[in-house]
Length: 348
Image (cartoon, rainbow, N blue to C red; front, side, top):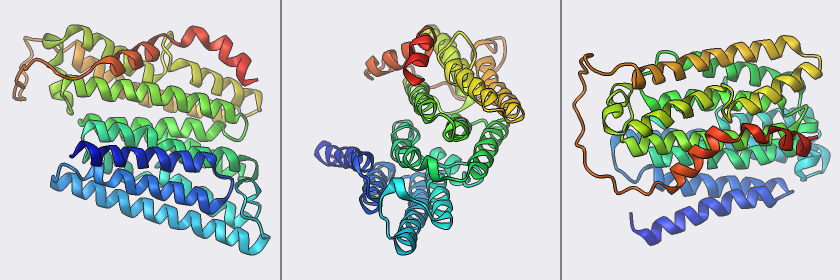
C-alpha cells in the first residue's frame, strides 16, 4: 500500500477514536465509530486474499449493524426523553439497545461469533489493530453509560463472555483464533466489573492492550500463525521462545506477571460487592483460558526433537523487523505487577 494512503487511513483511525472519546453527544460519537470502521476496512482488505476479503465483508456487516443499532437507540432516547447526551441515556429500551449494539461492536458473547472468523482472515498487524485500538472507542461510550445500564444484563454478558472465551479456545490450532477467544474472555472481565468500578475496567483494558500487543508482535517476529510452526521457534530463537511462554502465562493471569493484577483486583472487588458466586465462576473460567495458554507453552518449550514435526520448515532469513515495540510491550507484560499498590491508590 502507498505510504501516503496508509498514513491517511491510520490518521482516520486515530481521528475516529478521538472523536468518540471527546464527544458527549450521541451523533458525534456515532460518527467517530463510523470513521473508525471505514478507516480499518481498506487496511483489512489490502492483501487481496479471498480470506482477507471475506473477513473484511463480515467485519463491515457486523460493524454496520452495531452502528445502526446504536444510532437507533440514541434516536429513540432523543425521541422519548428529548436528550441527546451520552450520559443521559435514561429510557430502558434505548439503554438496552445501545448496550447490545456496543456488545456487538466489541465482540462480547453471545454476540461474539464474528470475531474469531474475522481475526483468522487478517494478517497479524491488522489483527493487532483490531484487537486493541478498535476496542477503545466502544469502551469510552460504555464507561459513560455505566450508571444507566441494567446490572443483570452486564453480569450475563460478562459471565457468558468469560466462559465462552475460555471454552472456545480449547480446541483451536490457529494462533489468531486463540487470541480472538482470549480477547472475548478479557472483555468479559472488563464488562463484569464496569458497574462497580469503571476505573478497574480501564486498568484491565490497559493491561489487555499491552499483553495482546506483546503476543501479536511476538508471533509476527517469529512469523508463525499455527501451533505446529510455533513448536519450531525454539531452535531458531530461544530467547523469543522464553519470553513468548511468559507472555502467554501473563495473558492467562498467573502471578508474578502483569496479567495477574487486574484479575486479582476484579475478584477482590466482586467479593466486596457481595457476589462471591460470580467471582468464583469467572475465576474458574480463567482456568479454561489458562489451559489453552499452557497448551501453547507446552508445544513451544517441551516438544523439541526427537519429536517429528510434519510442518514445512520456514526459511531462516535474517529479520528486518523493528523490535522496539515488541521489547517495550514484553517488558510491560512481564514486570508491572509490583506497581499494584500505586495503581490501587490511584483507583480508589
